[in-house]
Length: 83
Image 1: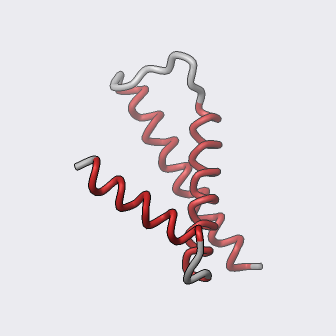
Image 2: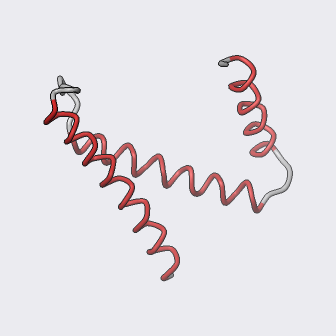
C-alpha cells in the first residue's frame, strides 16, 4: 500500500509542476485562458498519468493479447505516419 501511495505522490508532483508551468506562461503573457481553467489541467494530467501507469503495468504483466498488439500497432502507426 505504501508503494501505491508513493506512486500517486509522484503523479501529483508532476501535475503540480505542469500547473506551475501553466501559471508561469499566463503571468509572462505567453499563453491566455479563454474557457480553460486550472482545475481542468490538473484533472486531465492526473487522470492521464494514472491511466498510463495502469496501461504500462498491464503491458508488463501480460505478454500477449489485444492490449499488447494494439499498443504496438498504434506506436508503429505513429512512428511511420507522423515523421
